[in-house]
Length: 158
Image (cartoon, rainbow, N blue to C red):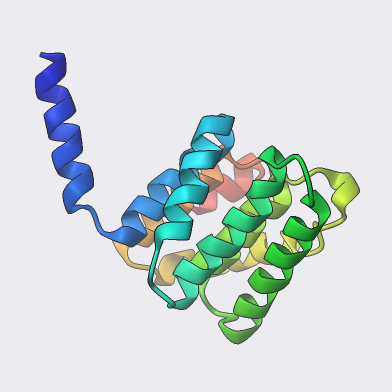
């Protein structure tokens, strides 16, 4: 039975798009250092140069600081600068805003990269209804586990 489930899981992952793989891996990345490493490796392997893929790559750089022994500050600075640049070029992309919100929500306060939490949260809430079903599901999953959203705000995302 375990072999059967393993084969089905492998089959699903094989036919999953790169972006879906990135999303799924990113959603699990903060659960453990192994998941963080898996996300970083997956992001590094991506060949796409679209804004969202590049946003996930920037998030991977920032997250690498969590497990790196050296150059942690440089990793965060490079990743944050890249993510900010991508968002500046694509200010209406809800997925990029979600990435930045999740990074800023999970980064230690001492780093100081937390300036857009309120703006990104408001953007997600106000633009949620305009998204396709897959993106609505992704935003909803994030909001339900996010520390930044109140119960009233979560209710608006249902």
